[in-house]
Image: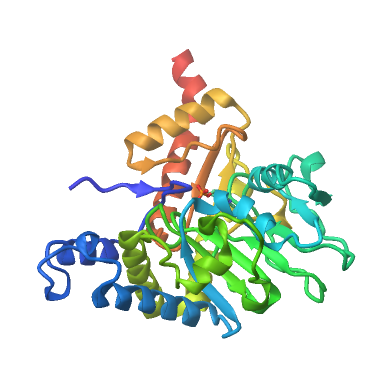
Length: 366
Ligand SMILES: *Cc1c(COP(=O)(O)O)cnc(C)c1O
Protein backbone atom coordinates (compact mmCIF):
# COMPACT_ATOMS: atom_id res chain seq x y z
CA UNK A 1 0.00 0.00 0.00
CA UNK A 2 1.28 3.43 -0.95
CA UNK A 3 2.02 5.59 2.08
CA UNK A 4 2.31 9.37 1.86
CA UNK A 5 2.39 12.32 4.20
CA UNK A 6 -0.58 14.45 3.17
CA UNK A 7 -0.05 18.16 3.88
CA UNK A 8 -3.32 19.19 2.22
CA UNK A 9 -5.13 22.28 3.56
CA UNK A 10 -8.47 20.55 3.03
CA UNK A 11 -9.97 18.05 2.52
CA UNK A 12 -7.21 16.88 4.79
CA UNK A 13 -5.62 13.89 6.45
CA UNK A 14 -7.83 11.77 8.75
CA UNK A 15 -6.64 9.49 11.56
CA UNK A 16 -5.80 6.11 10.05
CA UNK A 17 -7.45 4.31 12.98
CA UNK A 18 -10.70 6.10 12.13
CA UNK A 19 -10.47 5.11 8.46
CA UNK A 20 -9.79 1.53 9.52
CA UNK A 21 -12.89 1.54 11.72
CA UNK A 22 -14.97 2.94 8.85
CA UNK A 23 -13.66 0.10 6.69
CA UNK A 24 -14.44 -2.52 9.35
CA UNK A 25 -18.01 -1.25 9.73
CA UNK A 26 -18.58 -0.48 6.08
CA UNK A 27 -20.68 -3.44 4.98
CA UNK A 28 -22.53 -4.13 8.21
CA UNK A 29 -22.97 -1.27 10.65
CA UNK A 30 -23.93 -2.43 14.17
CA UNK A 31 -25.54 -5.62 12.92
CA UNK A 32 -27.92 -3.72 10.65
CA UNK A 33 -26.84 -5.64 7.54
CA UNK A 34 -26.10 -2.36 5.78
CA UNK A 35 -23.65 0.52 5.69
CA UNK A 36 -24.16 3.83 7.49
CA UNK A 37 -24.73 5.42 4.05
CA UNK A 38 -27.79 3.24 3.60
CA UNK A 39 -29.38 3.86 7.01
CA UNK A 40 -32.47 6.01 7.21
CA UNK A 41 -31.69 9.31 8.89
CA UNK A 42 -34.88 8.70 10.90
CA UNK A 43 -33.64 5.33 12.20
CA UNK A 44 -32.67 4.85 15.83
CA UNK A 45 -29.21 3.74 14.71
CA UNK A 46 -28.56 7.04 12.95
CA UNK A 47 -30.19 9.03 15.75
CA UNK A 48 -27.65 7.47 18.12
CA UNK A 49 -24.80 8.49 15.80
CA UNK A 50 -25.84 12.15 15.59
CA UNK A 51 -26.61 12.30 19.33
CA UNK A 52 -23.20 10.85 20.16
CA UNK A 53 -21.49 13.24 17.74
CA UNK A 54 -23.13 16.21 19.44
CA UNK A 55 -22.38 14.88 22.93
CA UNK A 56 -18.72 14.28 22.12
CA UNK A 57 -18.27 17.71 20.53
CA UNK A 58 -19.91 19.33 23.56
CA UNK A 59 -17.53 17.48 25.81
CA UNK A 60 -14.42 18.21 23.73
CA UNK A 61 -15.11 21.95 23.51
CA UNK A 62 -16.91 22.29 26.87
CA UNK A 63 -19.88 23.80 25.06
CA UNK A 64 -22.29 25.31 27.62
CA UNK A 65 -25.95 24.25 27.63
CA UNK A 66 -27.16 27.61 26.38
CA UNK A 67 -25.49 26.92 23.02
CA UNK A 68 -26.96 24.78 20.23
CA UNK A 69 -24.87 22.53 18.03
CA UNK A 70 -26.04 22.29 14.43
CA UNK A 71 -24.82 19.91 11.74
CA UNK A 72 -25.46 21.68 8.46
CA UNK A 73 -24.37 21.66 4.82
CA UNK A 74 -23.12 24.25 2.35
CA UNK A 75 -19.65 24.56 3.86
CA UNK A 76 -18.25 27.44 5.84
CA UNK A 77 -18.96 29.47 2.70
CA UNK A 78 -22.74 29.26 3.16
CA UNK A 79 -22.29 30.58 6.69
CA UNK A 80 -20.85 33.74 5.13
CA UNK A 81 -24.45 34.42 4.01
CA UNK A 82 -26.48 32.72 6.74
CA UNK A 83 -24.81 34.73 9.49
CA UNK A 84 -25.82 38.17 8.24
CA UNK A 85 -29.22 36.85 7.08
CA UNK A 86 -30.05 35.57 10.55
CA UNK A 87 -28.18 37.84 12.94
CA UNK A 88 -28.13 41.32 11.37
CA UNK A 89 -31.26 42.59 13.06
CA UNK A 90 -30.09 46.21 13.25
CA UNK A 91 -28.51 46.05 9.81
CA UNK A 92 -25.04 47.02 10.96
CA UNK A 93 -22.18 44.55 11.25
CA UNK A 94 -18.42 44.68 11.86
CA UNK A 95 -15.76 42.53 10.20
CA UNK A 96 -12.04 42.06 10.69
CA UNK A 97 -10.15 41.45 7.46
CA UNK A 98 -7.26 39.10 8.23
CA UNK A 99 -6.98 37.27 4.91
CA UNK A 100 -8.64 35.68 1.89
CA UNK A 101 -11.38 33.88 3.80
CA UNK A 102 -12.30 37.02 5.76
CA UNK A 103 -12.50 38.86 2.45
CA UNK A 104 -14.91 36.24 1.13
CA UNK A 105 -17.04 36.56 4.26
CA UNK A 106 -17.12 40.36 3.81
CA UNK A 107 -17.98 40.03 0.11
CA UNK A 108 -20.99 37.86 0.92
CA UNK A 109 -22.21 40.18 3.71
CA UNK A 110 -22.04 43.08 1.23
CA UNK A 111 -24.63 41.29 -0.92
CA UNK A 112 -27.28 41.50 1.81
CA UNK A 113 -29.63 44.40 0.94
CA UNK A 114 -29.46 47.49 3.21
CA UNK A 115 -26.73 46.03 5.38
CA UNK A 116 -23.92 48.32 6.56
CA UNK A 117 -20.70 46.30 6.62
CA UNK A 118 -17.81 48.03 8.41
CA UNK A 119 -14.32 46.59 8.17
CA UNK A 120 -12.98 47.79 11.52
CA UNK A 121 -9.49 46.32 11.20
CA UNK A 122 -7.38 44.88 8.39
CA UNK A 123 -3.85 43.59 7.85
CA UNK A 124 -4.10 43.84 4.09
CA UNK A 125 -1.46 46.61 4.01
CA UNK A 126 0.90 44.11 5.71
CA UNK A 127 0.11 41.49 3.04
CA UNK A 128 -1.71 39.59 5.82
CA UNK A 129 1.62 38.53 7.36
CA UNK A 130 0.06 39.07 10.78
CA UNK A 131 -3.42 39.36 12.25
CA UNK A 132 -4.62 42.91 12.85
CA UNK A 133 -5.24 44.18 16.40
CA UNK A 134 -8.93 44.25 17.06
CA UNK A 135 -10.10 47.69 18.23
CA UNK A 136 -12.98 48.40 20.61
CA UNK A 137 -16.36 48.13 18.90
CA UNK A 138 -19.49 50.10 19.62
CA UNK A 139 -22.61 48.32 20.81
CA UNK A 140 -24.72 49.31 17.81
CA UNK A 141 -23.24 46.51 15.70
CA UNK A 142 -25.16 43.25 15.50
CA UNK A 143 -21.93 41.29 15.69
CA UNK A 144 -18.19 41.28 15.11
CA UNK A 145 -16.88 38.66 12.66
CA UNK A 146 -13.34 37.29 12.87
CA UNK A 147 -11.43 34.39 11.29
CA UNK A 148 -9.52 32.66 14.09
CA UNK A 149 -7.13 30.89 11.72
CA UNK A 150 -6.27 32.19 8.27
CA UNK A 151 -5.74 28.98 6.34
CA UNK A 152 -4.12 30.54 3.29
CA UNK A 153 -1.86 33.12 4.97
CA UNK A 154 -0.98 30.96 8.01
CA UNK A 155 -1.91 33.40 10.77
CA UNK A 156 -3.96 32.93 13.94
CA UNK A 157 -5.73 34.75 16.74
CA UNK A 158 -4.81 32.74 19.83
CA UNK A 159 -6.42 35.37 22.04
CA UNK A 160 -9.93 36.47 21.29
CA UNK A 161 -11.11 39.89 22.45
CA UNK A 162 -13.19 39.53 25.59
CA UNK A 163 -15.54 41.98 27.23
CA UNK A 164 -17.03 42.89 23.87
CA UNK A 165 -20.72 43.70 24.29
CA UNK A 166 -21.78 42.34 20.92
CA UNK A 167 -21.55 38.70 19.85
CA UNK A 168 -18.21 37.67 18.39
CA UNK A 169 -18.67 35.35 15.40
CA UNK A 170 -15.73 33.11 14.52
CA UNK A 171 -14.88 31.26 11.34
CA UNK A 172 -12.91 28.44 12.98
CA UNK A 173 -12.79 26.20 9.90
CA UNK A 174 -9.08 25.49 10.04
CA UNK A 175 -8.37 25.41 13.75
CA UNK A 176 -11.48 24.17 15.51
CA UNK A 177 -10.47 21.44 18.00
CA UNK A 178 -6.76 22.05 17.44
CA UNK A 179 -6.32 24.87 19.97
CA UNK A 180 -8.33 25.58 23.09
CA UNK A 181 -10.88 28.38 22.86
CA UNK A 182 -13.55 29.30 25.38
CA UNK A 183 -16.87 28.86 23.58
CA UNK A 184 -18.52 31.40 25.86
CA UNK A 185 -16.30 34.13 24.32
CA UNK A 186 -18.33 33.69 21.12
CA UNK A 187 -21.89 34.18 19.92
CA UNK A 188 -21.40 31.75 17.06
CA UNK A 189 -18.59 29.46 15.90
CA UNK A 190 -18.64 27.75 12.52
CA UNK A 191 -16.37 25.38 10.64
CA UNK A 192 -16.36 23.30 7.49
CA UNK A 193 -15.57 19.74 8.61
CA UNK A 194 -12.98 18.84 5.97
CA UNK A 195 -9.98 20.29 7.82
CA UNK A 196 -10.00 19.08 11.38
CA UNK A 197 -13.24 17.16 11.82
CA UNK A 198 -14.01 14.73 9.01
CA UNK A 199 -15.16 14.45 5.40
CA UNK A 200 -16.30 17.42 3.31
CA UNK A 201 -20.04 18.01 3.17
CA UNK A 202 -20.62 18.75 6.84
CA UNK A 203 -20.55 22.18 8.47
CA UNK A 204 -20.59 22.55 12.24
CA UNK A 205 -22.30 25.59 13.76
CA UNK A 206 -22.22 26.31 17.50
CA UNK A 207 -24.64 29.12 18.29
CA UNK A 208 -25.74 30.83 21.51
CA UNK A 209 -29.44 30.05 21.82
CA UNK A 210 -30.60 33.63 22.42
CA UNK A 211 -29.25 34.58 18.97
CA UNK A 212 -31.59 32.14 17.25
CA UNK A 213 -34.74 33.98 16.36
CA UNK A 214 -37.42 34.04 13.72
CA UNK A 215 -36.60 36.12 10.68
CA UNK A 216 -39.33 36.84 8.14
CA UNK A 217 -39.19 35.17 4.76
CA UNK A 218 -35.94 33.28 5.19
CA UNK A 219 -35.70 30.09 3.13
CA UNK A 220 -36.07 27.22 5.62
CA UNK A 221 -32.65 25.76 4.82
CA UNK A 222 -30.98 29.09 5.63
CA UNK A 223 -32.88 29.64 8.87
CA UNK A 224 -31.08 28.68 12.10
CA UNK A 225 -34.38 28.47 13.96
CA UNK A 226 -35.73 25.88 11.51
CA UNK A 227 -32.50 23.89 11.66
CA UNK A 228 -32.46 23.99 15.44
CA UNK A 229 -36.13 23.09 15.85
CA UNK A 230 -35.57 20.04 13.65
CA UNK A 231 -32.34 19.00 15.39
CA UNK A 232 -30.34 19.44 12.17
CA UNK A 233 -32.72 17.10 10.35
CA UNK A 234 -35.11 19.46 8.57
CA UNK A 235 -33.92 17.65 5.47
CA UNK A 236 -31.60 14.67 5.02
CA UNK A 237 -28.35 15.53 6.80
CA UNK A 238 -24.93 14.40 5.50
CA UNK A 239 -25.23 11.14 7.42
CA UNK A 240 -21.94 9.53 6.45
CA UNK A 241 -19.93 12.69 7.17
CA UNK A 242 -21.58 12.99 10.60
CA UNK A 243 -20.72 9.35 11.32
CA UNK A 244 -17.04 9.85 10.44
CA UNK A 245 -16.97 13.10 12.46
CA UNK A 246 -18.28 11.13 15.44
CA UNK A 247 -15.41 8.65 15.07
CA UNK A 248 -12.90 11.52 14.86
CA UNK A 249 -14.38 13.03 18.05
CA UNK A 250 -13.99 9.63 19.78
CA UNK A 251 -10.39 9.42 18.57
CA UNK A 252 -9.65 12.90 19.90
CA UNK A 253 -11.29 12.18 23.24
CA UNK A 254 -9.17 9.05 23.61
CA UNK A 255 -6.05 11.13 22.93
CA UNK A 256 -6.96 13.32 25.88
CA UNK A 257 -9.02 16.00 24.16
CA UNK A 258 -8.18 19.45 22.84
CA UNK A 259 -5.64 20.30 25.54
CA UNK A 260 -3.58 17.22 24.68
CA UNK A 261 -3.80 17.67 20.93
CA UNK A 262 -2.90 21.36 21.26
CA UNK A 263 0.32 20.37 23.04
CA UNK A 264 1.13 17.95 20.22
CA UNK A 265 0.22 20.55 17.59
CA UNK A 266 2.52 23.07 19.29
CA UNK A 267 5.35 20.56 19.17
CA UNK A 268 4.78 19.81 15.49
CA UNK A 269 4.60 23.50 14.53
CA UNK A 270 7.61 24.42 16.68
CA UNK A 271 9.77 21.80 14.96
CA UNK A 272 8.99 23.28 11.56
CA UNK A 273 9.24 26.96 12.59
CA UNK A 274 12.55 26.35 14.38
CA UNK A 275 13.88 24.69 11.27
CA UNK A 276 12.65 27.50 9.00
CA UNK A 277 14.13 30.20 11.24
CA UNK A 278 17.65 28.79 10.99
CA UNK A 279 17.46 27.61 7.38
CA UNK A 280 19.72 29.18 4.74
CA UNK A 281 17.19 28.35 2.01
CA UNK A 282 13.65 28.32 3.44
CA UNK A 283 11.88 30.92 5.55
CA UNK A 284 8.49 31.68 7.06
CA UNK A 285 6.87 34.86 5.73
CA UNK A 286 4.63 35.17 8.84
CA UNK A 287 5.32 37.41 11.85
CA UNK A 288 6.16 35.44 14.96
CA UNK A 289 3.24 36.51 17.17
CA UNK A 290 0.67 35.49 14.54
CA UNK A 291 2.05 32.15 13.39
CA UNK A 292 -0.53 29.41 12.88
CA UNK A 293 -0.15 25.94 14.35
CA UNK A 294 -2.19 24.32 11.60
CA UNK A 295 -1.15 26.03 8.35
CA UNK A 296 2.52 26.87 7.85
CA UNK A 297 3.51 28.65 4.64
CA UNK A 298 7.19 28.81 3.69
CA UNK A 299 9.22 30.09 0.76
CA UNK A 300 12.72 30.02 -0.73
CA UNK A 301 12.33 33.44 -2.35
CA UNK A 302 12.85 31.90 -5.80
CA UNK A 303 9.72 30.64 -7.58
CA UNK A 304 11.71 28.19 -9.72
CA UNK A 305 13.31 26.56 -6.65
CA UNK A 306 9.89 26.46 -4.91
CA UNK A 307 8.48 24.61 -7.91
CA UNK A 308 11.38 22.17 -7.99
CA UNK A 309 11.03 21.54 -4.25
CA UNK A 310 7.30 20.80 -4.51
CA UNK A 311 7.91 18.39 -7.39
CA UNK A 312 10.71 16.51 -5.68
CA UNK A 313 8.82 16.40 -2.39
CA UNK A 314 5.80 14.94 -4.16
CA UNK A 315 7.96 12.17 -5.61
CA UNK A 316 9.34 11.42 -2.16
CA UNK A 317 5.83 11.03 -0.70
CA UNK A 318 5.32 14.52 0.79
CA UNK A 319 2.16 15.49 -1.04
CA UNK A 320 0.06 18.67 -1.33
CA UNK A 321 2.82 21.03 -0.22
CA UNK A 322 2.17 23.60 -2.96
CA UNK A 323 1.15 26.95 -1.46
CA UNK A 324 -2.18 28.55 -2.27
CA UNK A 325 -2.12 30.18 -5.70
CA UNK A 326 -2.66 33.62 -4.15
CA UNK A 327 0.45 33.34 -1.95
CA UNK A 328 2.80 30.99 -3.85
CA UNK A 329 5.64 29.05 -2.26
CA UNK A 330 4.80 26.09 -0.06
CA UNK A 331 2.36 25.39 2.74
CA UNK A 332 2.41 22.54 5.23
CA UNK A 333 -0.96 21.99 6.87
CA UNK A 334 -0.46 20.16 10.16
CA UNK A 335 -3.98 19.42 11.35
CA UNK A 336 -4.77 17.18 14.34
CA UNK A 337 -4.48 13.92 12.40
CA UNK A 338 -1.12 14.81 10.85
CA UNK A 339 1.56 12.70 12.58
CA UNK A 340 4.65 14.28 14.15
CA UNK A 341 6.88 11.77 12.27
CA UNK A 342 5.70 13.45 9.08
CA UNK A 343 7.12 16.76 10.29
CA UNK A 344 10.53 15.35 11.19
CA UNK A 345 10.63 13.45 7.88
CA UNK A 346 9.79 16.65 5.99
CA UNK A 347 12.54 18.57 7.79
CA UNK A 348 15.07 15.89 6.88
CA UNK A 349 13.93 16.06 3.28
CA UNK A 350 14.22 19.88 3.29
CA UNK A 351 17.72 19.61 4.69
CA UNK A 352 18.84 17.19 2.00
CA UNK A 353 17.23 19.40 -0.65
CA UNK A 354 19.03 22.47 0.76
CA UNK A 355 22.44 20.81 0.65
CA UNK A 356 21.84 19.58 -2.88
CA UNK A 357 20.65 23.00 -4.05
CA UNK A 358 23.57 24.80 -2.47
CA UNK A 359 26.05 22.34 -3.95
CA UNK A 360 24.40 22.39 -7.37
CA UNK A 361 26.53 25.22 -8.87
CA UNK A 362 29.65 23.16 -8.01
CA UNK A 363 28.26 20.19 -9.86
CA UNK A 364 27.67 22.39 -12.88
CA UNK A 365 31.28 23.60 -12.94
CA UNK A 366 32.63 20.08 -12.50
C1 LIG B 1 -11.69 26.22 4.03
C2 LIG B 1 -12.17 27.46 4.65
C3 LIG B 1 -13.40 28.05 4.29
C4 LIG B 1 -14.28 27.48 3.21
O1 LIG B 1 -14.84 26.31 3.62
P1 LIG B 1 -15.91 25.52 2.74
O2 LIG B 1 -16.41 24.51 3.69
O3 LIG B 1 -15.17 24.98 1.56
O4 LIG B 1 -16.97 26.50 2.32
C5 LIG B 1 -13.80 29.18 4.96
N1 LIG B 1 -13.04 29.72 5.93
C6 LIG B 1 -11.86 29.20 6.29
C7 LIG B 1 -11.06 29.84 7.38
C8 LIG B 1 -11.39 28.06 5.66
O5 LIG B 1 -10.21 27.53 6.02
